[in-house]
Length: 211
Image (cartoon, rainbow, N blue to C red):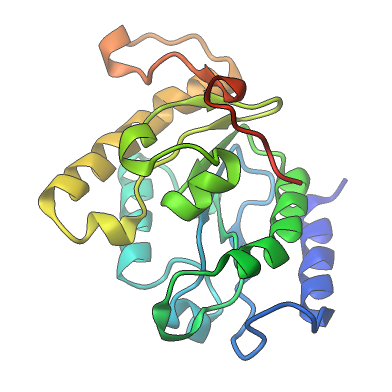
């Protein structure tokens, strides 16, 4: 399967679906390497993302991309998207109805990309995978699904609000290389204390994946 072609087909399908909510805003589908190992998923585009039709390009996005580069990765080594693909007005949180409407498209996007690890950014994205999880309690923990691992972290916009949140965000980001090694089955050569915790099965937190 040509993943880039399949993603382009999915994008065109979304553009043609006039029943989706938030049709007054531009579609921000996602960008990056369609054959990546790691997929970052936020909640919804903001004003800057709506204007540029790209995910994570405002202050929060700059922080995300800076931390990706500081790991020695390139931005086009990963894929970045959101659950809701259009900007909610006044930068409000996406509603549950909006999340439900866009959820099937995210599921298909994940199926096409087939990443080894998914990094939900913030509580809305995390609760897509882990409905009973709490972001401050469960961010930085590694969970295992059937075909990929999940490592939730704070949304970068939350990290910008204070030193404690920023320290938490950056500490979790530094875990990503070790978590990815675990996800792709590469033997680790670091101290246990430097690694992420032992992966938790989704059923341990009574979670289920939504399709």
